[in-house]
Image (tube, rainbow, N blue to C red; front, side):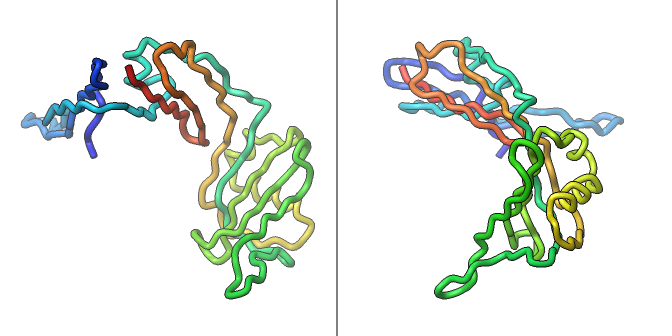
Length: 206
């Protein structure tokens, strides 16, 4: 914790990672503010270095002189999150040999127009579900800003009596598609995204 990659150096033996351990220390001034202070610098010679970092702020790709070309696709959008609700006939389990197993995925509506997926999860309660709302006929940006709109949309798509408790969390997901501008000094590069960040995993070796 509190350790960040500051820079790196490449040589015939591998890669030297230069790490800084930092901490916020209280300044002895009237305002009582704090400042980030470097506590320790460590150099580590390693055969490979793997960096998982943001597309725009990562140390690895910046020092390698790499840029990323891509876009955020507004036509690929999903509202996802966890919700607590109960519904008449909304099964949570299937029968197994030894005990019931949470394996039901419920699909409602149409993927292209208006759709809903529900998967039971006990992590947030015995009435917990992971949900996905999708479809071009839904105003997903607006739905993601309102718990009430989530309730209304789910009630519209499930033709049974639903009792809602609360939305635990939700996020508006849009597909982010990025590609590095060159591969000459990369062995492997892959990207992934989630509702909260864009990740680039970069492996380098001379």
